[in-house]
Length: 143
Image 1 (cartoon, rainbow, N blue to C red):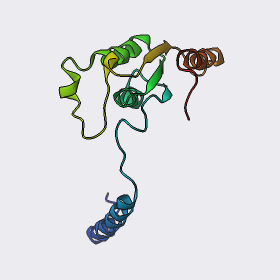
Image 2: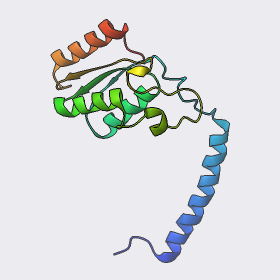
Image 3: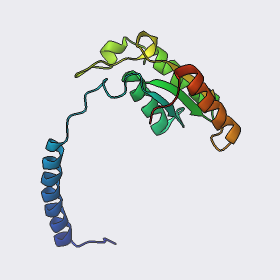
Image 4: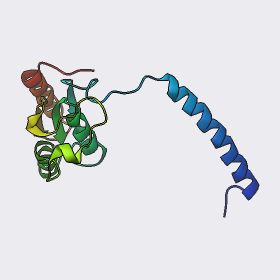
């Protein structure tokens, strides 16, 4: 059973088009994000880095030159993330990652560093080790 009639749906689409124009005009007022500048040498902890959003975030942060401490329950998946960051997708990362502006870094060729610790973020001792690793390796964590 449909929640909206055809006319109600058309009305909502018309409203959406108007909202899209409002959003676009707001977006024009926001300064453009320049890749490689905001995250370069930032110190970041990424939880869930073995898969999903955490994995994607870790790769993105590494591409922008951040220093990372990667965390995940699954050590094998975490190793996969580290391997991908260090080696790219199996071909020259400059061809794989087309830069638009600024500089992107992937693998050890860039200025970023990446370490990984498998464990459970609900375990206070593990969290303490993660933070200590970030402090020891990178001098702290950026907010």
